[in-house]
Image (cartoon, rainbow over all chains, first blue to last red):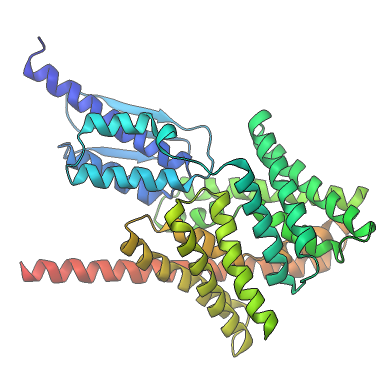
Length: 256
Length: 151
């Protein structure tokens, strides 16, 4: 039987582990850093670790419990995607833990199985969403009503290419580049065959689902909240994907 | 006028479409569309009355920031869920595309003009967000102080 000190140590380990896991899921799903820090510190305080310290960046989390027996925990983050429902779910679980509706064991168990708890929209619905963004924004930005449907279809194709390349070839910026090439080529071919009216408008619409809007917003927020590591890092990530999109369109314009 | 109504509907659906891409929770989708429409209406009104590019985008960003914080309180969800889709109709997509296109075609002068417009718009939106965050922080501070006094 473990004595009280060992049991306390095990408990502290578990709390640290849960905190790092929660932070990792939030950063991987595209949350801003101040929210991550806030959530982690709240969990630690509710679990009784008063002197906990956390250092979270875009690529990893370091956390110490502030107690002598337990060391620090490190969690590394290599992939980042956008999944707002996971952010909402971690937030909800942390609230429930604060209200003592679930204990730390249940909390950790839910975090480990978060992929089963959180449903993602099926691919056809995501593709439809991308088409919706493309088609409607052509009307909003360019006042171009006749090109609604062709932009809708081009945007759907662009998103599908991006989605499948992200799954099968894990080179991040290549998928943006090739999706942009496909969008540009399809738009120009459609106009040449008389289906579309203005190629520029269709390309603008088709690119909109791929534009890194969230990373840019998060970059500004992180930098302003004083996180000078994560803000610029996110900015560079957004800049590279914007450049990849731009080169893709430029190549399509040259060859088609 | 009919184009204006069509545009409003389009903005609403663009917010929902972007919500589908970033996997918003189901009960947040409708609100995200409404946030997008509200911010775009503010942008549109200012753009067509007295403002230029800068102030229109500034107030658009400000509206997103304030509305999303209020809705986040009501729905008990993180505010980032609502300001991301709201941003979509304000993003300078057309100008960014024209920058790239003119760079690719070798018209550097024109490209630079568009690029400065992109930077100007993005900066204005970011400034709107900052001011919204500032207002929110002041509100929390006031709440905190007044609660401290009453105890």
